Image (tube, rainbow, N blue to C red; front, side, top):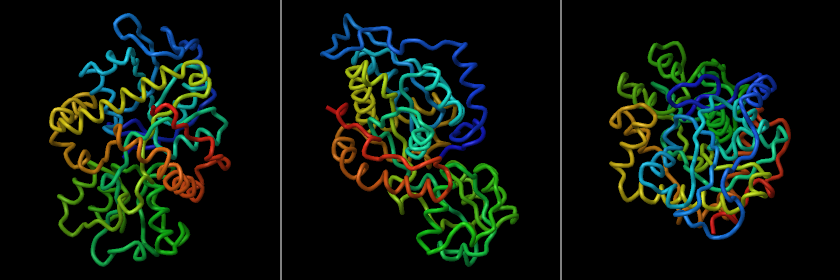
Length: 342
């Protein structure tokens, strides 16, 4: 999936200088998050539009917002969704702290990380699960998680790759102390494996496909499908925005779900829309799309208040703790709010 440190075409996660960034963003503008009628009640899109300032990164998992805009779904729900590109977790934190954004699209573990830092966030919907889009690759006689012991493993610390590696090691009764960590970005990890500079690489699409096609001896050892939801993305809002504009949050969730439903009915057209938005050729992202499970109306209603809250989020919390990503434990009973799925 996405990187923690640098804004690549599929970038995510951790950064630094949150206080300085918060001051900068505050100077750039804060204030009220909604310029329309953000209270409760049934919207009339013909006469009412509410503005939602939303953070996003150029990752296909968040692509349903581009679908929603192009297909007129946000207009239908009376929303003007203003997307702001955010590079990393420090940027996410600063944007919320300064009031620059009202909602955001982030990984489940990033949501918990920000909560552990004291931000008042609520997870209001599931956006996607990674299945085969995040994986551990190796060659030769390294065929299982148990075989990672003593090996040189390239992975990006603090990112989704870090979570996946910890989960794989735990499944074999190993810890990070049982391997030789080689910190590097996910894009470089696959290249390092092919160049025989490391024994194992933890990476994500499209780098997985590139490595597998470049060297026939490279194989998958472990992937996100073995821990459903560990690598997942969610829609979040600030507690303040949700309290002041509950119906806007509800309509934003409905717009996401409707866009995901439309995508599932029109996958080729949907992939083209998302690929253009992230600046990639649709064919180059085929493997990435194939490795992502989007959540729409039915899936969110079935899993959000059930399996995601009772199984997935505790799994993510434990993996994030083991990876040393959380400043403190998060009260998971307060992390999600399913009321906006109505």
